[in-house]
Image (cartoon, rainbow, N blue to C red):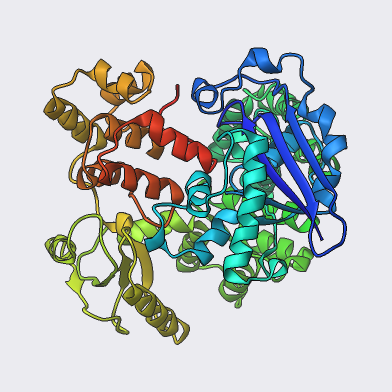
Length: 564
């Protein structure tokens, strides 16, 4: 069995453009002692972030004459395709960087199988025996020499020794720990990638105008929708499919009205791009169906002609059976048209069901907007406060507290803080009751509890309390002045969770104060996520050094605090 021990250092945390790659390749359970060592500096062809440079010491001058990742991939690909790739936090750091760079250079990513020594160490070493599971901590624990930390090659070598010690301590079989690598979300690489979201929008737009045409006319609201779509997507002038569609839209909007003939022309223009931009018939048609449903409710009215047209479309595309939301919408349409007539009440019911299918989260929030008279059961630990605080909030809103999950329970509310075992029992009970005809909605705490203070008000309160100026705070948080300006000028502006945590660290807030600030923006710290664990640990230890915290975040490949 061949093993590839891998580590990388990157120029920036956003794109993870690789500046150094370290590989140690060796075999186990064989009589072949051959070891391959690869230590390469790479030109990332991207900007360097000063925090990254401070951590690994690689500067633009050091790599200016080095090859690019694209140039070296062919030489190192074999270590990924015919081997098990092993590294520390490998899913979120090294392999995430590898796949992002492959996407950037339009190289098809290979199928990769891997082992994470971070996850393996958590299985082998009890948490009370070690302060954390970072590579340097584990090397100290096992007296493994780490010649130079945050050097990709030396980290890969240390990881090789670490794996041997973990196997030796636990007796685990390495083949039982192998996982297939599933690439992380590529949304932060849209600069380098084709716009798959735009493809989906094109398919959905086709479905929407098809929905408009079900009753053989385009009304004022539908005309405005097409006009607004054109304005929204006009900024994507580098996308040939979108610019082509916009040109046709401009032509048919010239006289201020759209005929059925023009709708057919627009649909034909969009369809000619399907072979170029779609890869799955089911995916394509499902996206069209979602657009079709959206087109039916844009004007808030569903006519009998539209409903009959939808039924005909569903019959023609019944190969979607088994794919959400086809089965549900097919069942609803068959029910409302069972007598061949669409009544006003049936049209309203169909509209409500379509709204829920297209935006279930929005529908749930509307359900929760009024708690009056609703029976509510609570489960878990709550960021809002003690369970008694949450109960008082619900009672003040007119709700009724159920101590246990019953058939009469309307909503089961799950706390957003660290969960306890009782939550799993109550969720299971609610699901079982729903299977037998119950209608218990399962919600998160933040879906029903509105913050008593806005984020802006609370942040400005903490700034005043600290005695620091606004400028001192945003600079200490490694944030640009523009973010503070947006916060002060807009009551509704909410920064990202990372940036709110940067403010919390800069202001030296406690855990409770940090959670108050986060919850006012709809976030919460949880011990279920690595980012949150590091923030909680830092605040608990009164470590308010953002640079030190960012080194911890860099080690596990997570976006850090601040933007500098």
